[in-house]
Every structure is written in structure tokens, then in C-alpha cells.
Amino acid sequence: MFANRQQAGAFLSAKISDFLRAENIDCNQLVVLALPRGGVIVALEIALNIGCPLNVLAAKKIGAPQQRELAVGAVTSRGLVIVDETLTHYLSVEPAYLKKETEYLISKTRELEHRWRQAAGIEERLNVVGKVVIVVDDGVATGKTATAAGRCLKEEGADKVILAAPVIAANTLKSLLIEYDQVIALDIPVEFAAVGQFYSDFRQVEDVEVVQALTQAISHKLVKSI
Image (tube, helix red, strand yellow):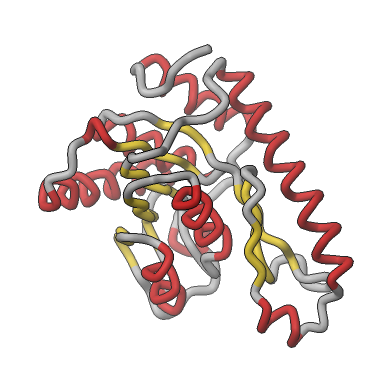
């Protein structure tokens, strides 16, 4: 169990550093993209320890109509959408519902990204073409948002896309290995109810904390300011 997201990020950064050395990956080609909000706190530790740029990529799950916590898909702020066709068919999710939710969530993720970056005073987005991108979250359960993020970055021209998280559900790992060139985790448990069960402190991350993390990255020249 991790004490908090900062500790998890510090431990994870050590494992990532070992991987980068083993693969002889040039840190100058690296970009860390955090999945907000919790992933930003973990990602800051990684960016600080490795010394590479940090930015955010907002992604949100599409919740089932009567079970909002059950993800039937996900979107990113870049407009990429994934839908679990098998699950939506099983739950008889109406196309009109998916369309409405998708449009709302894309708009919401874009608004959030813009607000965080504007508050921190950073550029709107990083150019990932030809880069090795490390996508970071504080934990991965179903993998829907992580899948959407990975596909989005490959479409944008990233050379390699790596997923890094302190904890990833074992039954999700196989699908993630299809989407990502590499998956790095500290714990891959079979028994997985929720990400929070692996943290002593898993309090909700507020907008101000996201902005503070990005601002700290700027102070260490890990983010380009406007």
C-alpha cells in the first residue's frame, strides 16, 4: 500500500528510470502526460526525477446510464472516443445517450484542460510527434481512459507510448499491452475493487492542486510557460 500519490510517484519514477536505462531511451525525447486529476500528482514526481517535460491530457469515462461508475467507453480532450460495443449492447445503451454523453464529456475535458493550463500559465499542448510519451495515472481499473489516451497519442504521431501507474488491475493488463508499447506498474493485483484501496491517503485532488503541480513543473523548467 502506498502512503499517498507523491510516494507512489517517487517509487514509480525509480522503476521508469531503470526501464529507460535498459532500453537506452534518450530523456530528451521524453514527454510525461498526466491523466488528471490524481495522475498529475504522481506524474510530477516522475517528471522531476527524470527531468522531462510535463503536461496534461484530460480523459473521462463514459458511464452507463443507470450505473455511472461503470465505464462503457471514454473520451479525450482531443476528441478521440472509444466505446465498448459488447458492453453497450449487453446493457442496451441507446445511441442517443452515447452521442449526448460523448459531446458533453469532450467539451468538459477541453474546458478543464484550458482552465488548468491558463491558471498555470503554460502552453496549450505539447507536440508529441516523434516523442516517447509516458502516460501517467494514479491507478488503472478498467483501463478505458488509459486506452483512449494511448490511441489518441498514437494518432498524434508519438513514436512510442508507455503507460505508467503505481497499480493496474491484472484483468486489465492484457488489453493495455495491446494499446501501449510498454506498461510499467509497481503492483498488478488480481483482487482489485478500486484504486483507492491501495493508498492510505487517497483524498480527491482539487483543481488548485493540479495547477500547483503544473506551476512547480514550470519552476523546474519542465513546462514551457506562455
